[in-house]
Amino acid sequence: MKKLLAIALLVSVALTIQAQSSDPVRLEIAAPAGSDPFNYVTAGENGVCIFYPTINDTGRDSVSWSFRMVDNQLKEIWHQQVPLHKDVTYLKSMSTKDAIYLLFHDTKRNKEGNIIVFMIIPHLRVISEHIAMIPDKAEVVDFEIANSYAFIGFNSRKGQPGITGFSLITGEKRSYVITAEKDALLLDISIDTTLSEIFATYKIQFSSSKNHLFVNQYNSPGALEKTYDFTEQVERRNFNSAQYLPMGEGRGMVAGTYGYNVANTRRQYDYYDYYYNNYYYNYYSPYLSRQSNYDATEDKTPVSDGYYTAMVNDGVADKIKYFNFSGFNNAFKYITNPGALRIKIKPVKKAEKTSDTDLSEATEVNDKTLNLRLITHDIQKNNGKFIITSEAYSPEYHTNTQMSYDYYGRAFPTSYQVFDGFRYSHAFVAGFDSTGMMTWNNGMEMRDILTKYLNRKLNTLFEGEEMVLYYNANNKIAFKSINGNTIVENTAYTPLAPIRGTDQPIDEYLGTIEHWYDDYFISTGYQTIRNNYLESNKRNVFYISKMAFR
Image 1 (cartoon, rainbow, N blue to C red):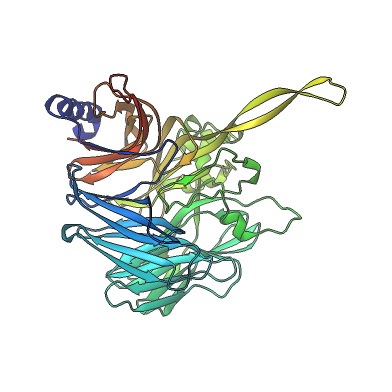
Image 2 (cartoon, rainbow, N blue to C red; image 1 turned 90 degrees about the vertical axis):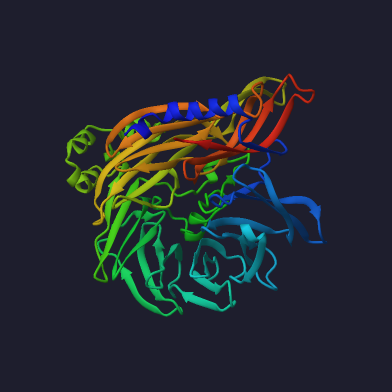
């Protein structure tokens, strides 16, 4: 496939043409070093919406948020400021052809409402605000927009999970009750817009070694129509993420990541702290900052060992299938975590020789504990296949030694560990057919990424049966072409084009790249740039770059 095989050349050519004919299409906004205030969402050919809190206070407890709309050449079209409570946090965005939807959560004030959805219509320069309520101290799990209704799923430490729905036109509110069981956690909500059905995927955590997965189906007004209870669930396997994909007429698939449950302990298992804690990565947020005093011994981030799938056919839930990463092709080529590498044993070779049609059985035979921390992605669909992707990372330290002295002045060495950041190692990607069977798997190494900030980096580009895996880090775009199990083109890199040829990036973090519209892609991130040819020779910026893949 020429388009994908020649992507390195094409990107380089695009950047060269930009440099020769005009300045690169790039926007820079000054940002203090180590900060991360800027958020953005693309709106196709309408441009990009950039929004962020400003230093301008508009009241005793409020802060102005700036909303800037730029066109597809990254030139500002309009700019508005909206006052929000100082404790408001941005969580997730969605966009359609005509509108942008932004979800904010007010974590402190509940009098008028603690959920805010902004609907932005770029070409009309309109921002409308819609307010709803979820329980005090509840945490948002998911956010969906369908048929002019907003749906917000939440978990609550002192109560049951739930879903709040409300109309963005009339304000009509609807409530969806998940379960009366204790220790229940909502994992995902999904909408079948054709049949006007809402699905809630949740688990009940009975103990440290036992949890159970369910999917509820509701009609549009909020009445529970059916609960799918998946069969033959294996104890000591924990469901860490889930997404339900409705296929219409009583059919669907639930899929996600699983790991082995925490070891038995005399200490009472706190399901909420083990799933939601200060260090758990909320993959609906654009990123989560990790502080320099991070302590791995206090990190209860769920660790994963593979993917799982289960089907719903004719309204009946089927058996859950587990696919352990240790049985993936070339898995140990990508894994760099020493603990995970220790489980590599001879039987894995047997799994690698197994035919594609028997991958579930092969991986289950060699089910090993890899304990991988994963950043999960929304499941994608291409040519009738469901694509599951996740990125693996691990905390990294170095040891400092210094001399200490006892009461008598005698010197002795003491050592302590210093947290350096999180090391991205690789991504696992797998394709599943309409029966939930894995038909292929592959991966991509993610090199030289050490950061105290976590965000989704990897993205995918499809053309026919082939796909490109690509990400933005260290001022370079990395990309790799695959076709199912086959590697079409190994990982290659191309640099981002600076505004000036003499600019030298010396630090970066939170790099992203994603498809924008047509053949254009958008890359963003934070950089520290040095240019000794300028009077002010160092600057810290948030950048947005437009790139063409042709």
